[in-house]
Image 1: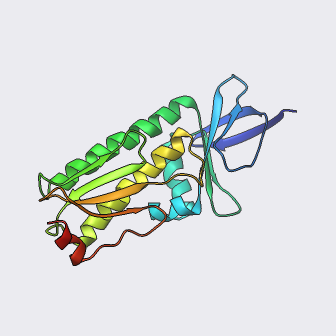
Image 2: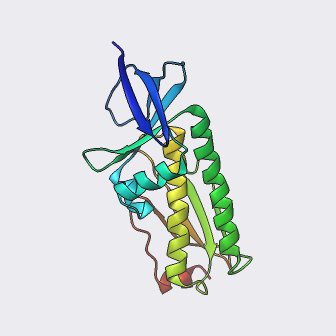
Length: 197
């Protein structure tokens, strides 16, 4: 059975045929009346927490950007973004571009500092030393984690299954300082840095 719904979102009004609606937390795909695929991307509370923005702020920011068909806050405080294939490519490409820009900003502190990620955006290798203030290091690593997580979500990873492994390396020696991931706070102390010398 098809349901016809009129929605307004991201500055465009459209009529859509929604088929096979399910609510299992997975990226949901439906078909628009012109046969354009609609991809639903869910932002969990875990994701919103690393973004540093509330659900309302996230909805407003993405609406203002205009790269979606619709975006809305769900009753449980999560956010759903509806996009087409072209918009999905935009979101995924922009994550890579933003990671490159973040890398350039980090290198303004020191040319040996860098942020690397694997092709699937599931792992970050951050290279810096104690000369980078801890509050700055946290901002760079956290933003890199956000970009990697959002890439995974826009590429189709379930809203509860994304994960980013974070490896911090001493940029002076190339040795590992500490490893963490999105499920566990990454913490280290001077003894971890001493061991990496």
